[in-house]
Amino acid sequence: MGDSAGMISINLLCFGQLAEVLGRTQEINLAMEVTCRDLVNKLGIGEWTDGGLKIAVNGEVCSLDTALSDGDEVALLPPVSGG
Image 1 (cartoon, rainbow, N blue to C red):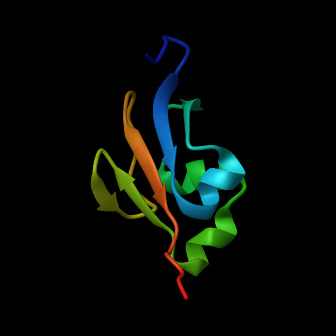
Image 2 (cartoon, helix red, strand yellow):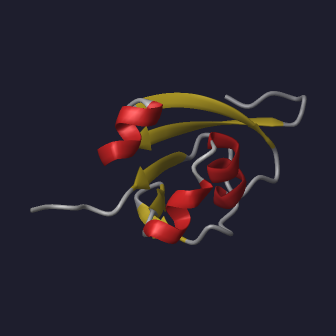
């Protein structure tokens, strides 16, 4: 997955409105020593963190400061709105 040039590869899953903006799934290559916060900023969705965005890494909800590793599955879970 990752390569010797200091990169990791993660699988990104997006739900709700974020799936409409970013697509449902994609593979993303990132520099090593990256956190969930770095990923959110790279994707340009930083404003979602103040609106209740949850992030799960390998099926477990985590903080924005969680470090990502090669092969991780990252799910972006926006707040659910209903009416």
